[in-house]
Image 1 (cartoon, rainbow, N blue to C red):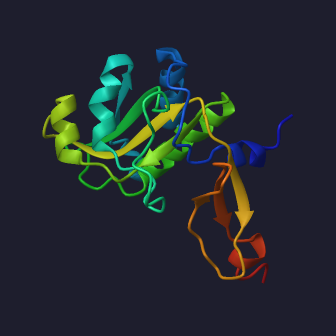
Image 2 (image 1 turned 90 degrees about the vertical axis):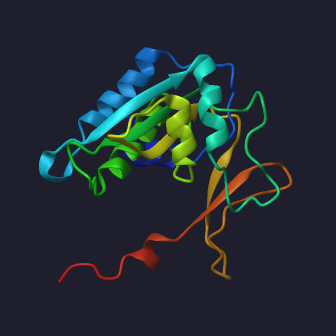
Image 3 (image 1 turned 90 degrees about the horizontal axis):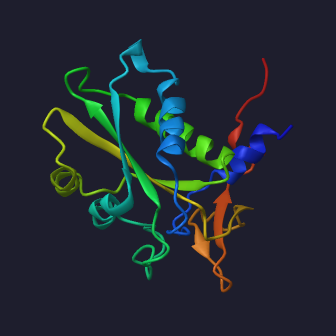
Amino acid sequence: MEDFRDIVKRSRSYRRFYENKKITIEELEYMVDCARMTPSAQNLQPLRYIIVTDEEREKVFPHCRWAAYLKDWDGPEEGERPSAYIVILSDALVSKNVKWDHGIAAQTILLAAAWKNMGGCIVGSVDRESLSDALRITGRYVIELVIALGYPKEHVVIDEISQDGDIKYFRDKHNIHHVPKRSLRDIIIKTGA
């Protein structure tokens, strides 16, 4: 049986995909169903989802910003763009404060994608107003996050943070994406009583 940490390690922020390798509606609905099962603050369940595939993808892509640390990269090129998106919305009639629900849902979607050998990226830097217009989202719904999904076309590795403490992800000369992570020893402040 696969160790859960292996699934977590595979659940990286992928930004380049095999664009023509499709994800089925059933697979996307499975991911949303996994998110639906997660805890919700006060069990209000204010999240709603828009599944975007096929030609509709072009309505989402221009409204997302990609990889702020990669200054010389404007995002995935044609042929490397996401195969699908899941747009996470909150329903203002249920709650005007979704607290952390959208983060839990987004991570669950990425874990479900990794479990199915797919990948994704949580995109928080989104032009929400223009995307709402493009997708005809009504006033009661607020875009919280966009999840870009597909079959990864890039290799992402986890590195220990270097001596200089730099946490910025980067791509090396072989186009491998490196993500520095703090060690377990550095993040646990106290163990036990």
